[in-house]
Amino acid sequence: GYIAERYGQPYLPEAPNVYRSKKDAQDAHEAIRPTSMEYDPERVARYLDREELAVYTLVWNRFVASQMASAVFDATAVDIEVGDCRFRATGQILKFDGFIRVYTEGRDDEQPSEEEGEGQLPPLAEGDVLRLLDLVPEQHFTQPPPRFTQATLIKELEEDGIGRPSTYASIVGTILNREYVVEDEQKRLRPTELGFLVTDLLVESFPDVLNVEFTAGMEGQLDAIEEGREHWVAAMRRFWEPFSRDLEKADVEMRDVKREERPTDLACEKCGKPMVIKWGRRGEFLACSGYPECKNTKNFTREEDGTIRPAEVETTDEVCEKCGRPMQVRFGRYGKFLGCSGYPECSNMQPLHKPTPTGVKCLQCSEGEMMERRSRRGKLFYSCSRYPDCQFVAWDRPIPEPCPACGAGFVTEKVTKRYGTVRRCVKAECGWQAQLDDGNGEYAPLPARQAAAKAPPRRRTAGNGAGRTAARRRASST
Image (cartoon, rainbow, N blue to C red; front, side, top):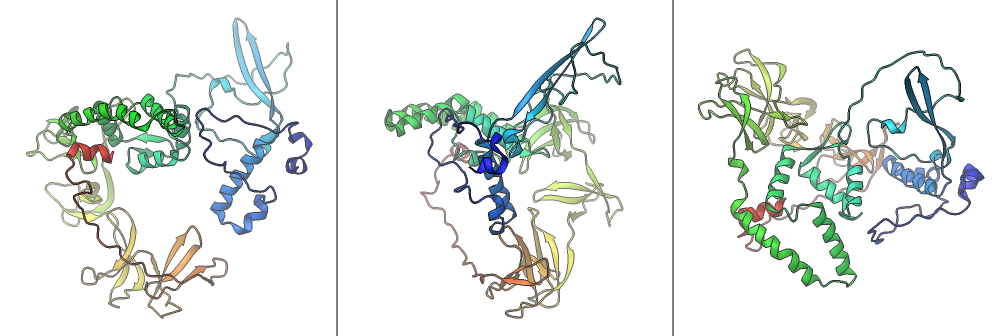
């Protein structure tokens, strides 16, 4: 077989590896696996782009590893006696790599636990006398469990019986898209202030629904309905009657967080009055309780223990052209901007990202220059320097080359996952586009684009959510 021919007979187990299905597995989906052992990654590489090949190689290696012999380690523990003290060192020595030769599972914790040892030990025999080379004292404290990554969160959901393989991606996507959590540099999911707030509100109003036991139990009821062991009407009635009561109660009693002011131990540095936490368009922020006489506001961060700390003001090298004070990065209704540090005496403001010239003439007026700008949401776009007199806009980077098909003043460039670097005519009605070969700078033709038709505006009708109360709308949107 493939394993014996490629890696040698010792890597092939005596009998095929068979794995039991996990608890509550529905087995509704075929496993993701290679369709034939003839199509190894080397053979299909020329038909796939870089990302597709990486995914195929991952699937291939894991599938092959699942049918290979186990790895063999020698676990070693060494006790070293010095007077009345005993020191212990643990480690392991790899004797046969087995499936590890093909695939090694990544780890999610940052630091190995003490039980896992410190790695490989030198050959030792009982009674050996050791010479101390160095003594490194280390102090260890109990650490909280590491925060979830996407992978460990899905593993936890699976162990608790929540969701199915087909729904895990949407669960993780929802909490990220709604900004209930954010990913840090280590890809760990950290809850946001919005996440804490939504969780608190929902748990207060719907304690019977917002718990692991209910969600896992509902999955079991749905399985029972599918298998004919329970009638769906009875199951829905058991759920709806208590839930509808909680929903009506939440309509009246759910806290209006936008009007709440939570006191803090911080004092306003401008007037000395206590700072309070308020809720605004961009989430929670610190505000002086003396408003409107004092309009001091600050962003803040929350430590792991819940301590509130004002966020440090980010200063820049920019100087206010009106008063000469340094400009600071501030947050406004439409995101970050530069504001004078002398506010409120000086209320001068500037955009955080100043327009950058591209050296390409505007296609529409032929007088202005295309400038690189950022939208309110941070997306790059290109518009005429004569705005608002000329409102020509392009979303892709302009290149000072005429279109080979229609002769338009310039083409645009965009990097796509499928074709790599693609250049297109700035005129949508032309449709010319080509793949740029980075090796020799030549074009590889692509099918012509078709101008997208504009969708008609959506109209809100009486059947599209009208008439619902505020609490019901909040419940459905979360």
